Length: 207
Image (cartoon, rainbow, N blue to C red; front, side, top):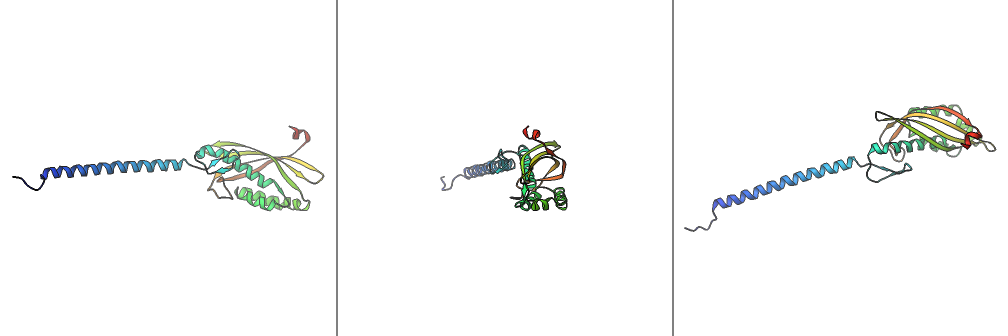
């Protein structure tokens, strides 16, 4: 006897096939989504500011912070020593304000000591020009922290007389949040100390 309805078993088999297909597709789609999210997160963690050879920051992908830190540290030290020691009567307030963003209280204490000793007053009184000629920094790493020794060569122009000096300073570097444009490298100079300052003679200048 013929009926207008399809066999109930065939309908159930078809429904089961459809449900299984949807479930399998959903599982595959979920797995793919999780994998994509994991990959994107991993790429994001490995992405950072790229550092140019001159220490400037450029928004390029991708080198790890471990690979960047030495370049950034050297650029940070060069920036600080330029601000702190490359000064004259017209720019010393502006430069020192920028330098204080790059170090902690040890830098501020040295600045206050120099101010109390009349260093900046003499700069104004005699229109002195203190110009940095070179900055050479060496880093030492210890369990992820960095110490530095920096040799800064600068000259003081007193008009008819120009004297050249060699300053050796030491300290450590601490990682902090980047603060554009005040502290673009995200580093802070700590335990800053001027170890030695000596006047260079003509023979030293020729070396």
